[in-house]
Length: 154
Length: 159
Image (cartoon, each protein chain N blue to C red):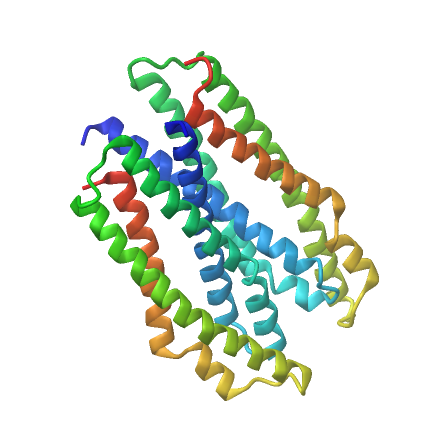
C-alpha cells in the first residue's frame, strides 16, 4: 500500500474519531442544561450515531497509523508516540466506562419521559455526577492532546 | 518549529474543527428526522450553535491558513492544479453547507412559530420540514466535498 493510501486512511480515521468525540461531548453538555427527561433523552439519543464513528475511527487511525509508522521507518518507541499510545489506552478504557454510565442515564431519562416527564433528582444527579464529568472531561483532554501530539510531534 | 510549521499545524487543527462540526450536524440531522414537536426541534438549537461555530472556525482556518501556506511554502504556488481544485472544492462545500443550514433553519423557525401559536403537540407539517430531503442531500454533498478535499490534500494531483 502506498504512503498516500496509508496516510489517507489514518487521517480519515483520526478525523472520524475526533469528530465523533466532539459531537458526543457537545450533545452530552447540551443534555446537562435541560430539565425534562424527554429533552435529556432526545439529546443523549442523538449522541448514539457518534459511537460507531468513534470506535471505527479509532481502529482505522490505529491500524493505519502503525502501518504508516512502519512504512516511514518511524521509531515506535519515540516519546511522542508512546505518550499517544498511553492516551489512547486511557481513552478506550474511560470511553467504555463513561459510555456505559451514559447509556444507563439515557435509559433512565427515556423511562422517566414515558412516565410523567417531570424533572427528576436522580436523573439530574446522574448527569451531574462529578466522577463521570471528570472522566468525560479527561476523555476530551486526551483526544485534544492526541491531536496535538500527532500534529506537533514534540 | 518555523512559522510555516505552526501555520500548517493550525491548518490541520482547523480541518479537525471543520469535520467535527459536520459530524455533529449529522448527529443532529439523524435526531431531528424523528422529531415532530416544536419543543423537540428547538432543543437542538444549542448543539447546532456549537456545530455552526466549529464549522465557521474550521472552514475559515483551513482556507486562510491554506492560502498562506500556498504562498509561503517553497515548491507550491497558488495556481497549482491541486490547490485550485482544493479552493473550488472548499467553495462548493461552503455553499452546500450554507444551503444545508438554510434548510434546517426553516424547521427551527417553523417550530418557533408553532410554539408561539401555542401548538406544542406533534405536527406532521413540522416533521415534513425536519425531514427535508434537500437538506439531507446538501449535507451529504458537503461531506463528500470535504472528503474530496482530504484526498486532494494527500495525493496533490499534478504537484
